[in-house]
Length: 383
Ligand SMILES: [Zn+2]
Image (cartoon, rainbow, N blue to C red; front, side):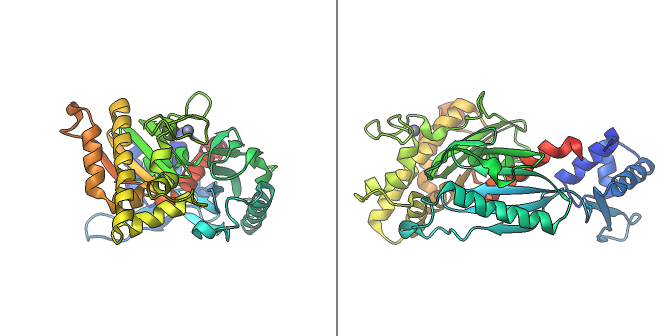
């Protein structure tokens, strides 16, 4: 549709801050109340924005309305695939989830026989069926799809899915005729989501580090995610800060990821490589307070985490660091130890005001939230 520049700006405000009052939205884009009435009417006629009466908070001022996504407005689908499960959401303008679906693959831990081993065609067919159901439930409203996948993602193809035996897999099988189909690495999308709707909103330079099956993340520079020239940036787990005697599945030796994941913990405990290293690490971190041996091993992993994060802070100079995935149970298990290892690794000039280490506000919703935002970016100019 041919949207006026003012309408496009106002729609952006509704997307970033749904529920904002009409008066505040008008102020945010620098137009008067008369113009705002006109622009909102345009957006309502296009079924993009709706209005609801604002809750009265006091007796003063004229009643106003709040701007919300239109009840028949466009939707995007967002998919998150992990090493063991998948999640699908239908998302409206403003980011709210209006419907969802998910796999029965659950993190059952070491005896999980149906997770990482499942064939890609089976998993993609399951997701495709769920996508078809949501498209039927919201006829003509679903405009785009974004997919977050583990491992290296170029275009819509997963080169190697971390924790799954998938190689060179085209995700478009999920919805082959989609007009707008976009995909990205899960940790990179989680980083984007923390900066747009999570704990790093307003940061100049945010660093997000996510431990899952593999360690990833991204630097977000004033809202722009640095994905690298080929889309493979943010592979913090493959920086050689680990033990050079340990070979990483990536082919390099001494990768940091091998010092902070479930396999590192198993080595420290003298145990075999667990079938699901993510569940193994998460369980140990939450049980660490009860068992001295586990606690010591978790502590050593936390030390490696804190040291590595300090190294990236020294190199990148962010004003906030958000930690996601298994880093959250680790930081909750040993907060003081993490702080000490982080502090010891920082250059002296940074120690007076080191960037805060915050748990990712979106938690496990980070990748799927980032996938939805990526889909909105793809379709935005065509609304
Ligand atoms: Zn590696």
